[in-house]
Image 1 (cartoon, rainbow, N blue to C red):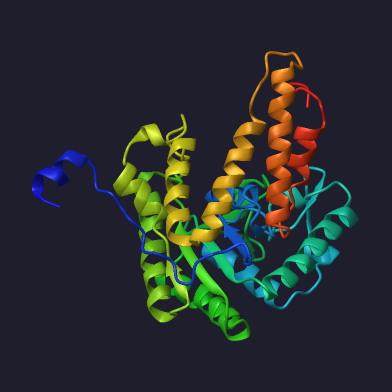
Image 2: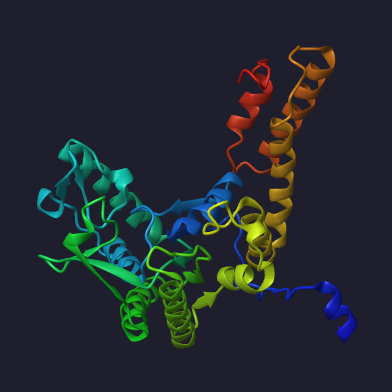
Amino acid sequence: MDDKQQHDLFRTEITPEPLKPKISYQDQMMLIGSCFTEHIGDRLANYKLTTDLNPFGIVYNPLSIASQINALLDPAAYSESDLIHHLDLWHSPDHHGKFSHPDKTVCLNRINARLMDSARFLRSANFLILTLGSARAYFHRETDQLFSNCHQIPATQFTSRMLSVEEITQKLGDALDKLCVRQPTTTILLNISPVRYLSLGNFDNQVSKSTLILAARNLVEHNSRIIYFPSYEIFMDDLRDYRFYEDDMIHPGSAGVEYVWNLFVKAAIDRKSRVIMQEIDTIRRAMGHRSKGFMTPAHQLFLDQYLKKVRELSNRYPFLDFSAEEHHFNSGVLPEQS
């Protein structure tokens, strides 16, 4: 590319290195990390790839991620002594609030059922995708216990500190080394969330992201099974514009997430699987079609045509579940009413 071509781009494009091995529909993926993990995980699930997304709920700091990996590798049931009670709810310091409940038995059942299911899933997972959000961690003052989620407990009950590069490298590295020893065919895909954590200021956010980047580099250099995907760098250096963020100027917006997703698909998912994804896309767009409010012969023909396409896909790819799509086109109910 000559200087004029580079200038005409008006930005620095990032092309992620192709993932080896690539993800296919025969693979299982576990995803753990910040809310950006949910964006990618939801899209993978929508395309019917086999995923387990955040078995402890959203998590931001790498020490909590390391703890979760260790817990999944050697699962031990949680008990009442592991819970705390606050604002009429029982919570786990290791879990997101979606596991909390007014009844401690229900809370424990939710936690332990998911723990055991996800531990089984991880044992056969081909890929573990980790998204590091923040290098700042929170510890309970009385017990010095690490909290993955503070559950609206007053900030005065916690101390926070910036984790060091060495601490992250050692603790997360040890957990991933253990995983690699037990599961020689699991590939780890590591990335850093582009979400900006500005509650303690822009400088703190920059230090946090820099710490995560340095730790990620150490982990990749130490373990050849760990691959880095540049989610953070795509937002910071390629998109580099607030129009790709939500109105809060902190969280990535839909256009930015879609851009990263498309680069992820191209780099990480094999060609045959991308063909299937395109076919699913066609069906999903048709499901979003809206009639004029009447079951006209033309609309009935449209439904029948896509019902046939769904059944053809189901026959060609019997390992995928198209029951929801088949119901949509076979129901005879207008899309506005379904």
